[in-house]
Length: 151
Image (cartoon, rainbow, N blue to C red):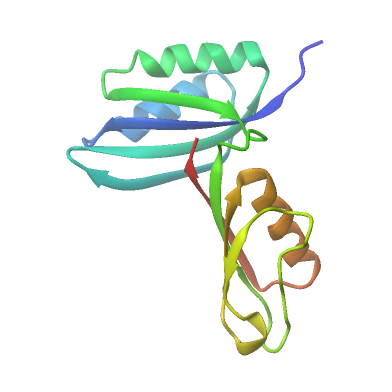
């Protein structure tokens, strides 16, 4: 029996039409859905694309080999989503007057005062940001967002 695991792939690709389409086609034709997909800033003719997805180790390796062969792709780094090197940022917007702070069990940096109507910005491992965002949702967050920064 194969066990699916959550993965994060950081793809560096050429800034040209069709790069994102080619990448998404690799996943689509192999029956793998994205948990999330985000593009980063373009610098020097290339940009980054962060993809989170669930797959077995074997399927993940096959996806990476196929993505690496795309002409528009310059590099691919993939890690388990639980790897502490996978860094992320999260934003939490609570209802007016509702205080929020990340749980003491996570190692994150944060700023903002939700009770004063400010969003709370949190930075740390993707796993810890996931805990913070889940806690905020449980406490009535109006909006949350998570972005993978590096893998």
